[in-house]
Image (tube, rainbow over the protein chains, first blue to last red):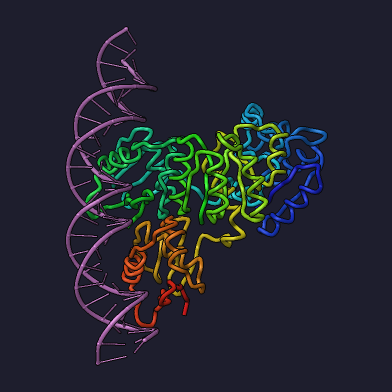
Length: 222
Length: 222
DNA sequence: TCAAATTTTAAGCCAATCTTAAGGAAAACT
DNA sequence: AGTTTTCCTTAAGATTGGCTTAAAATTTGA
């Protein structure tokens, strides 16, 4: 996996280069905007790390021009700015994620992994036992039969299936599916799990959505 | 791992408590500053989450006084304020990190893990003989077989494994796993040790959980 | 704008889990 | 050996948390 860093502070870029190379990424550095864009367009990278402010061309501008050519390659911003406005601005420019300086390297690494994950073979079709979920067409089938799910039902099922085999904690589910971060003294999850099990007509031997008492739920092929 | 939250808004603190407990931290809450400081100084916590503004004593002041006694224990500020000045002020008071409200629980969790990493050893997978315990997925395996444990069973096993080779006193166990600080004339530990041994089907030659008469228990790979 | 579909809240019920308690077994001490 | 202490084991009561349902709130679509 090849990563391009566009960053004018040698301290930061070298630190990143070393750390990422230890994780066996191939890393190039550009210290100036135009050079950065040139490399980005010609260098066949799998991911871009752009500083918000670089001499020559701003990270934003690099991202925008880069996006006209490469639609899929993920871009992560490193930024000292943290107002919501500018974040949104950055994301509109086509960035996939951003991370605030000073940042934690582990965290950056996690975000890089998240961005690279799709490339290393993510399909839009997921399976769970005899259930098929297609995120592209937004359809769910059980064996041959199509199951009609509402948005939330679909989102919940998708979350569980994407994390197949991993116990999903309630707090995570409520954050990821409902985007609620505080005060969740709510029973929505239960209601939707119930709806899913019902609509999917999970029989005795089809316990694909198991509850883990006190923690949450887990999807299993059994 | 024991965490103290000093926060006067019950909505936030309860949300945090629940979320963190699902991640198997032992959580106490103080809603008022002086009480918070008192607990912090006496409670043997591994990490403090301090709200910037709490009635009684400000988070800053709690942090400063706490630091005169405990140099190592990490402190994270929860703050609605986000100006650089105040952040620096907070960090000078001895905080290890700060996070702005409204924050994302995942992010907070990451930061907590970063702070606790040196102590906890970074990994979420622990081993004891042929037993594997994964705190991230909340699963336990013996050889290939998955063993289903309840919350308390899991917490107890985790505590013992994290302290592998170290004899764990009953009083410590009851503090860390049950969050009981006084009055431990109770037989719960015995009951749960018994349940663990049973569920893990520990045979003659698999005495991974040994009792130390008069003191407590110790986990050993043998 | 009104009706229908979806989402969320709330409450009672039930089952899993947690805790207590008590009798028996094993170890340590006299 | 007898006594005492500590631990193991079991079972029953208390508690918690999840399931289910129905109704209220919200959103969507005609």
